Image (cartoon, rainbow, N blue to C red; front, side, top):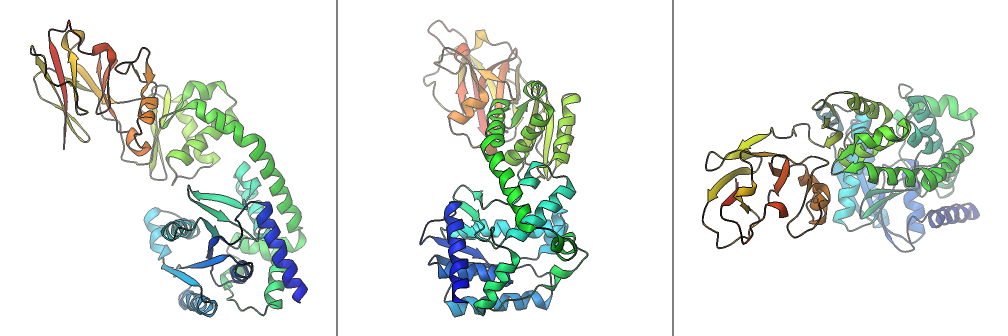
Length: 451
């Protein structure tokens, strides 16, 4: 029995090293439900000398059983003198509120709390107990759903939760039987979740009726091989094309039409992941978005609380269903201001040269170079400006990136135009073309009054 325990731990340690999960002695936040997989995960990582903290989420789905699970984990951590983070999560109300299935809502809550807790504790790795059989079951479920490439790849040994935190799966190379054998050899105790045997769930039916006739390790190896191929060849190609096709939070339709449809669809999926992370990033959703290419400008689809619309020759993405580009407004000199989301813009004309030409909320221009009325609108993909002091023009999207405007605020940026040419990116940059010079005799002041 001692050899079994040592061999199992050594295998897990070797797998973690091979897949670059963590380094020796690192602190790890371990998700422990109380089931055999997570209890074994805790025992192994604790035994390998990692600095372990535990997170348990009570989803309140199984009445008193959920509370008993929580009590079990509390006792387990007390016995091992490990720091425990417990969260109560009424998942059913969240599912109703977000129009998600209970399983999807639980998953969203789980990973959100994992990330939040890890960040608060300054821990960079969160470990979960997924194993080889889970990988095989997920592969079959995803194939049945037609989820495409990601479904075939399956779960990764390491996945980024956010910039400073990874999700790791130390047991992904181990089978369900080997995990249970280790638990019994170690005389570990755990909780049984009887819902795992409930055949109303597809995964439960697969586990009890299909998997006994299949080779889980072979299926998992296939997923791993496809994953390596995707990482080395597919991901770089997608990244390169996404960078070329994207501008701000938009994709260039002309570019999408020039590449194979399957690649264009992948770029739309990447757009969903980047700009509407709460939306389903799958082929079905991508096809709905792609249909906008054949519709007139202004048409939109709503997904996952966000929206995508056709803006001239671009597909524009927003993570808010309420976001709509402001209507074009005309701005006349010395008259009523134009309302914009964060305030209003005024135009004043003068024959007197200003004492001070600097200020982010105002722009002084050569009035004789302007054609009034001016147009006030949201910036759009493809917009260009010749920033003050520059020889050539620059994309507004690149300008906003270079000066550090957060991605969440870029979509609300307003521009003022004269006969279609941008004279001011409001609050950020003035056009060189309309600057005040020594020969200027008439002056125009654009002023942004904030709410």
